[in-house]
Image (cartoon, rainbow, N blue to C red; front, side, top):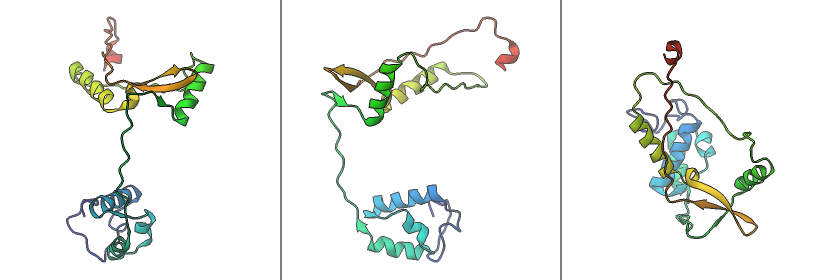
Length: 168
């Protein structure tokens, strides 16, 4: 009921007939894993005709492995993932290429709180290691270095002769 944002759900109800879809099904499977410690395949929800049938599968389900993947120490250089190795190779081959840059422009309306925008970008960088990761050579091997902090200063450019129509 919570996932579907419904007040009540009955055992005879069909998840998909109540408005469920694949993204919500993933949430249900995840919640079953978290609350019951049972590992079910996503298809289990698709293959059952009622929530009662799904509950029976959950009751018979295999106990989820409770082992937690440990955090790797950031004290030593870390090997590059395959995707990072590919990027490193391509950068070595064409260091000035902008092929993998994905530019975007946003048009904002209303007053812009520059301090809040600066703080939001800072929070993103603090939360996501990939935004604080650089590559360097360690001997002949490229490694990733995850920096504890990366200072970020929002660059602001005033447009002295901005066209009024462009500003709106």
